Length: 408
Image 1 (cartoon, rainbow, N blue to C red):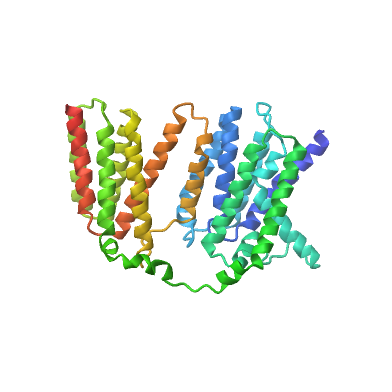
Image 2: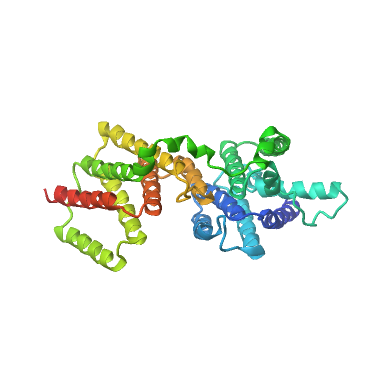
C-alpha cells in the first residue's frame, strides 16, 4: 500500500537518524554499533546480489574502522551530531533497501532489528520523560549507556556491553531472517523486555554495589606476582614461543613457491635499508614481527598441507596465548590491554564463518585466528620490552629458512 508504506519508511529513516545521534553518549558507541549493523547489512546485500549496497556499506565500515582507532576511549577525535546523524541515515536507508530486495526473501521487519538497540534506547528515554511530565526531547542521563554506568561499569565496559547487546540482536536477526513479520516483531519485543529487566536487576544487585565501591588495587596480580622468575623472564619466554611458532610454520611449508632469488635479495636489502632508516625503534620491530607472522602462516597454509602437524602449530599458539595472558596479568604497567575496537574485531572474527567466501571457509577462519594471536603477542612485546633481540633473531632465522627452502 504505497500511500501507507512511504510515510512509514520516511518516519523510520528519520527516527533511526535521530536515534543513533541520541544514543551517541560514550566514546566509540555510535561508531562501533553502526559498524556491526552495516557489516550485517553488507552480508545480506552480498547474498542478495546487490553490489552497490555492498560497496556503500563496505566503504562506510572501512571509514568507521579508521575513525575508531582515534574514537575509542579515551577518544581523541569526535564525530559530533553531523557524523552520528549521517551514520543513522546511511544505516536506516541500507536496512530498508536490503530488506525490500526482491532477491532476498527476508522479513521487512528485520530492518527494525538491525538498528534495534538505538531504537530501544530512544523509546526508553522518551517514555521515561513523558512519564515524568517532561518533553520527550529534553536531554537527561537515562539512556542505556547511563544505565550501564549506574550499574558500576567503567566507560569502556559500558560500551562493550552495548556492543554485545547489538551483536546478540544481530545474531537473532540472522537466525530469524526468513520468519514472518509478526514473529520478528515478537522476538524484538522479548529482547527489549529482557534487556531492560536485566539492567533493572543489575542496578539493585550486590554486583552493582560492589562495582560502585570498587577501588582500583593490585590484588588481582599479587598472587601471580609471587612467581618471580616468570615476572622477570616472561617477555623472553614469550619471544621464544612466538619465534618457535614462526619456524614451525616455515617447517610445515613442504613445497614453498618457487620465487626467483632476486626477490629474496630485494627483501633482505629492503629490510636492511628500513633498519638503517628507522633504527632500533618500535616501528621497525612492529613491521618486522607483523610481516614475519603473516608470511610464515601464509606459507604454512597455502604452500603445504598441515595435515597431522596442524595440532603442533595450534599447541604452540595456545602456549603463546597462555604466556601472553600471564604476562599481562603479572605486571603493574598497562602496556597492553584489549580496547573496544579489539572487541569489535573479535566479534567480526566470530561471525566470519558465516561469510559466503566460496573457498576453504574453515581453513581461512582458522588462519585469521592464528594470525590474530601472533599479532597480539607481537604488539605486547613491542610495547612491553625494549630488548627484542630474541624475537628479531627468530625473525631473521625464519627469513633465512624460507630462502633456503626456496633455493632447495
